[in-house]
Image 1 (cartoon, rainbow, N blue to C red):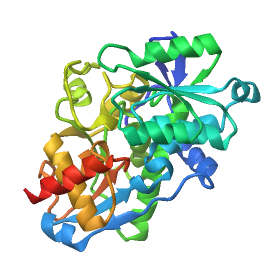
Image 2 (image 1 turned 180 degrees about the horizontal axis):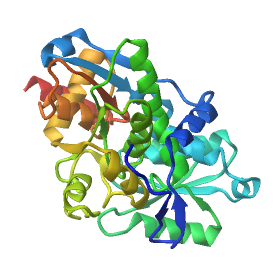
Image 3 (image 1 turned 120 degrees about the horizontal axis):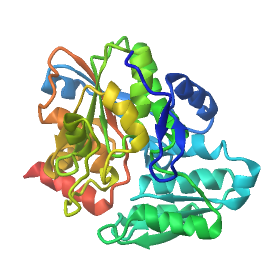
Length: 343
């Protein structure tokens, strides 16, 4: 097993934070067993025939709030002290982490403020408010969401629940990887590769921790939108790099400025590599997920499947687990995907 540091340095607070371990993922799974859905690992014979291998799709779009983010949010909020619960929480997110924190806070009787970009999909803003959270909108292209969020948190005394730079968040997201390992074994499948969307890196890092411990022969591939490939470029450079602030993509769920400082310490040691997907490839993957698997997947949640469908990873004769990480697609975007597949 590659050596992982025990701590990572938070550049904002100046505090050293514990790097989570595979044991933390296992403990999170025990904590969450009555809170999260054990989402299915699906297989399509037609898709297998098309690609020449065995493709196992983790349908995390069927999770509470429609995305994997609920796992980390519950793992973090369930461990708040009574004093912290009384203060309330704040999160900043383009949508899925927003909904996850809002719903987790609702379940534990905690008030929540969510900072969201004003161009986030309407369904995500609406759902976040529906869980009882106060939504504060900002312009993602002229304002820094962390600065906006921290100012509000400082003013109101709120506890920040970050989207990925938190050991409890990472461990919670890693429970998805633990489920995939267990479900694949139940299907008599030995995983050659695990393919997952990568943004700030929390899901990738959590899954990499447990895969490295329980399935060390499995390759771990991240996938990013082609113009938001900060993790891919960072791995090549050996240091965290930023995305072009003028970049645009329909994959709103997987857009960050740079890899997380905590998740980077895990991913740069455990990932096999990073692939990319275009917007058109994401739309095509959404259509395939609907037509072959009968599940709704949003653009950002479809990039891992998009990378596999586009032939970027050897599939023939291999068993590949692919994470469809979220299903909060606006109806118009889903219609666009299905129309795109007919062109």
